[in-house]
Image (cartoon, rainbow, N blue to C red):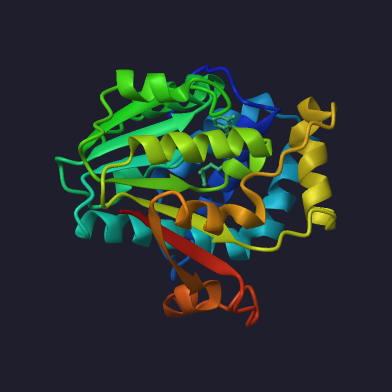
Length: 281
Ligand SMILES: C[S@@+](CC[C@H](N)C(=O)[O-])C[C@H]1O[C@@H](n2cnc3c(N)ncnc32)[C@H](O)[C@@H]1O
């Protein structure tokens, strides 16, 4: 089909969502795929005309370099959303939703309230592509076009977020793009908005920011952070912060979490790395 003419995120953090879409396309094409995301291909087809061959091929190379770990992470979040629904969370908020399509592709109960928070420029691209493909969510999906370093909480409430319902909050690769005070402002808002039984997954990973693939990623997309403003997310104190702010925390090692997926363990036995699940008391 002819792709719609849309404003394409060709630079800046919104562009990182295209890299993850490339990873989902690759997974979808595998006979032993862990999930299928038919809309990922549509986003790439709509975005391709905005890139010259060099930038597109650099993005493909990076998607290859991050593929093994990132695709397992997509599947792990799919499963954590399902677990949260099964545990009685009728409301889901994806922070930094990017081009994720869980509201379309997961078997969620139709009564689920599903919020996607991301930058306005991301949704300026995403929504017309979804509309052109007549994509229909399986539940109630609401877009929260707002900067997580700004007043996103107000926009979320305006869009119908309910503070009386347990919520599954997902940070799938966004808080690391925020400066530490902004990341903790998000944690405070999440805490304020969370009914008992709400859940928040926190990654506990050592990231070697000096590794070549991270430098290449910064060079490709983060030219707008040339000011050197630190982007360092919640950092190593996150687990303690949640445990001392009304959340009960439990830890699962990453290699154990993904063992059932039958792919090579990406962290090779580093049992200190994994996911902390925080449940609001
Ligand atoms: C690496 S992508 C991940 C996207 C998605 N979670 C996925 O896994 O496909 C990071 C996302 O965070 C979004 N993002 C970065 N900074 C943001 C901010 N300050 N406010 C809202 N969204 C932001 C980007 O636009 C991008 O969609």
